[in-house]
Amino acid sequence: MNVFERKGTDIGTRTGDMERRAAPRLRRRLGRSDLRAVPEARRALRELLRQWGRPGRSEIAELLTSELVTNALVHTDDDAVLTATVGPRALRVEVRDFVGRMPRPRAPEPGESTDGRGLVLVESLADAWGVQAHGVGKSVWFELDAEAA
Image (cartoon, rainbow, N blue to C red; front, side, top):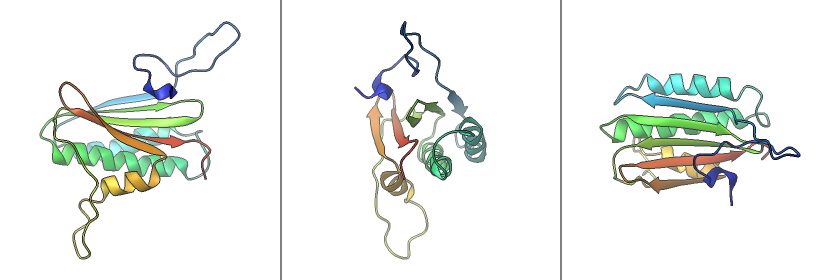
């Protein structure tokens, strides 16, 4: 089982007596249609990832996070919640909104505006990503391996 699939537990390191240490975590509520949350989320994530991963990994994490946050704020008419968890080998970022409509990556046509490229970026740059339905709404998430090239 992927350690990130366990809900309600902290990701941590194991010691002889199975002690667990809380994983570094970021959690932010994002106000409805408040696009000021995008650079704020990037700054908070940058601070969380100060000592994480190979060079360039945190920049990819910031880019993908801003795409998910922007999508949640632009394509829904409700609040969203950003959660980022740093595990021993990977980062998981999840943006939960409260609208049931599922997103889908779409390749924009040549000459189109820059809209519609967010999930294509997530799909191409993340080590794993997906959408999980909830009773109300969904979570769009991605994972980045700390040591990937």
